[in-house]
Image (cartoon, rainbow, N blue to C red):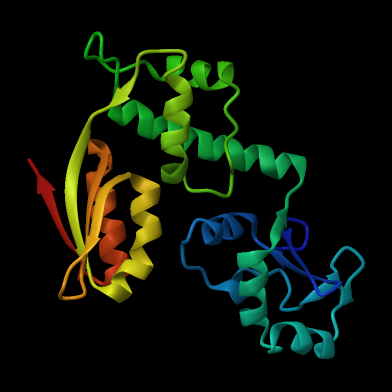
Length: 231
């Protein structure tokens, strides 16, 4: 369990009332990125507050009225999902730098200068991100921000990703779990529903993200997704 000093506030305002939890920063970030966490283990206190800074707990009556339950884990999950994370300036700077480093890693691994067919040096990518004043969101996954970052870098330098094209087939339930992942990681160029009720999508992704793409879809579908690389 994280200490009170290290925890950040997750806050949700609803029906004229405020509800807060105190949670470990990296776990809050993971949750926002869609990674499963043990919410209760991530809390600094198994309490729902109306003002965590004053230590004022929300009443069970107000919690029940707004959330339909007084289960701390369920209420905390909704606060994380629909509320905002209140970071200190130091925490936000640290998390943004960590996310920026991950984005740069992906670009260095996958991008080339199309004029020379060679990779760009890491330092060049870092300086270009600063020059373009690209804002990195500490709570969005690196994968979901890559396309936007790359579009902005193209204004300053010749750069492109080597890509591969894949066909993905999903059942209706799998589609609901995976569609966001597919849109985050690549460009969906075609999609259609088959007569058998399955969904087919053609998606273009950076070649270096191929294994991660497979892993994320398999994790969401327990290995039931059908993915084929197209020539």
